[in-house]
Length: 385
Image (cartoon, rainbow, N blue to C red):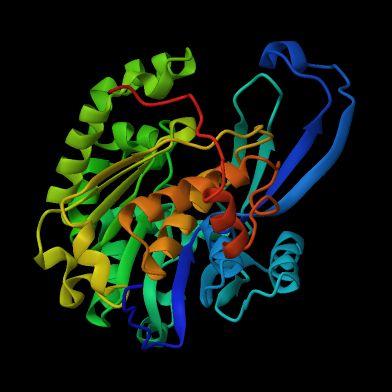
């Protein structure tokens, strides 16, 4: 086992988007037009509700995997905000650094998860739009090894100004020797977020990010927009990964690594995860990479890993990407090899989709590792060579 540096009281701080997910229980499936018709009374099953967003989801899995985790976010002083805080407290999370705003409503997402149709999220950003640098107590950066932030496209103050606000946040973390990690979300093309020059945004922010976790659709939307429509049509038509090959994933990763990160982990939905690590020794040094450094990290340098999903019965996909990221970050912080961390990431994501909500399918760390080391079969849905 590699030597892992643990000089701080907390392992991870997770900041960014926080909301409550409400998932109506559809009893019948089919096309959207066939299920939802104006004036038609639709008989429904029970509503599933749970906290959502990167803070509860990724933070919750990190906690379940045994990591000391600090949560930072913003909710409104309203009924939904009280529900969010109570739910986090009931599971044992510390909510001391989740701010309650008198001016904002709590964010919510109503997820239409109709059997046979891709899920449709109806989202209100609420208090997330006001989140900024001032919502993170600066002293927290000296108390954690890794800082993970999620969903800039769903947070107005974070996506405005070409990434200046988020860059300031990540700079503070890096000055304190913290390893930084960033997750994205897909912008709504018809919203102000959809009008952002996301390639320029990434060029401004990624120099301060050590680990970048975009999903393939977010990535193509942001840095290869001319090919996005074709990708989406093929993907929705059943072509695995919209026809994107492993070679193309490498090209995307090369472009992102040139912007600054040491590690790029591209989430591929039901096709798994692709991870590529920079060949530069300097990016993986303790001085550059920060407090999540461990002796075996040098063995990650210059490597590429493609990890398919595991074979499971899919119930829902809420929070699957968040759980995948939590698995990867835990693997890193526990000193796993790159292949082990990628397998752990996809294993966590695969466990997630066995349940309708984000967290109830996630086992503890030891149980997940036992399942990964058993005869758990890989899915036959793969990215093309």
